[in-house]
Image (cartoon, rainbow, N blue to C red; front, side, top):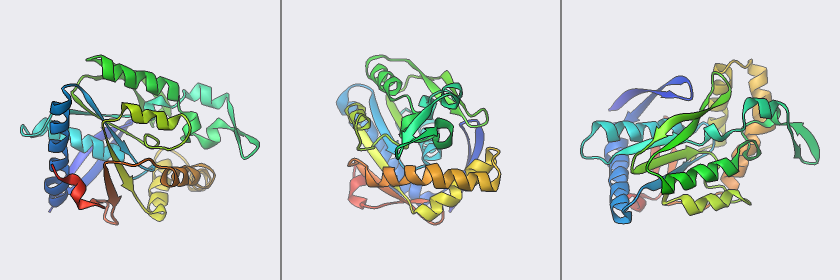
Length: 254
């Protein structure tokens, strides 16, 4: 049996369905596992939920938070994203990047690691470790821009979702020092392509513009994420029916 949900994510209302078995056999045991980890640590813990774009990670993180708020047996948990650490749209429109030896407008590759303010992300993660309350930025897909200090983060378990949190490349791999537990979602490129094209068109792009952006930017990002990922504690596979399964079932043991 599948249950339907609606979540507000990055300025859009997102519809999602999850199988009861996924919730009972994977999600709830995972959240109880995180509760034990947080109790043992005696402090706030930060969980990385990393994946290529369009795997449903933002929605899945929101689902974790929804369950924690509506099931008294589950721990208090807050879901946040790293998309709010994009450089501002004004900055992106006025800067370029050197890609394959050519100067490329940053706008043409928005979403790649180089279009994020990694230094600010590290600063905010350090604040999460040291302060009980932290204001966190968000990204609005309708405005195509960041919203500083959009969220107040104050829970003992934080699930941070993002594309590059487990990226094994220079500087990005330093994020591992802030991570207490990690989850990675794998997916087939063909499924991600159709999801990404739909997302761009929903944001106002014409079909040919969405395809051009995919070929010149998002396809490259997916390859970087899949080929340069750090080890994780739990790995999920996105299935053809938009659900998830554990690649290594023993990883979920509480």
